[in-house]
Length: 266
Image 1 (tube, helix red, strand yellow):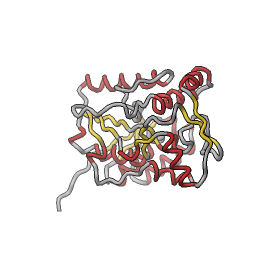
Image 2: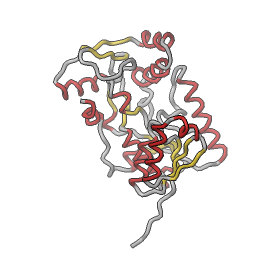
Image 3: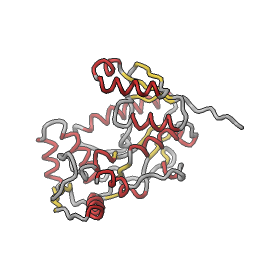
Image 4: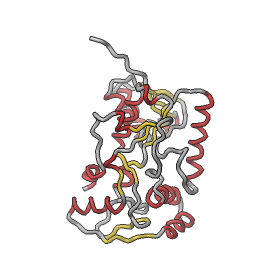
């Protein structure tokens, strides 16, 4: 039987939002897995220290350094307002430095993560799904791409040894996950047999929120404005010379649709 040597995978920001899913996916696919963390994380956060010990027990090698990592928008394309603009500009500069240095890369454009946005039906100032009324930015008809964090991680890890992703942007754009806020609310209403009062907020009102809200709300309003009003996740076609789409490369992976993801919040 042919033995296939899996690439070693170094995951940066392993205690972060996507990092945990990446570790899980890497281990499940049999890759020698390394986690890059800051020593201060272990010293100052007992819960994260316990998590790191669990990773070590699972066979993950822990390394102590720090580098930036990237998931979310395609930072070379997205048009977004401050304060999010400056954050994404840093990622864009890192991309440029990587290209100029001739370092092989695959950038992941994962779009929106489901746990944050679907758990509140796209509302910024909410800690959960409302019972009576839902605030919808714009007219609610702008398409946005929202993906399961587990799917994002699986696609990312599979891309590691795939020559088709060499020096390319891997876009995670499953067809069933292109949805509008109106559609997402309708999905929820169908699942729960409840009707929510839809309160539509104009773009002008959202811009005022970005200017007047206390931190960190302006950042999240800027993200929401780019997605739910301007459609920045869906408003371009993939340039095949620089990018590839995850579901086209890996059609065997059954990704979770937005409609299915909502089940976890019922």
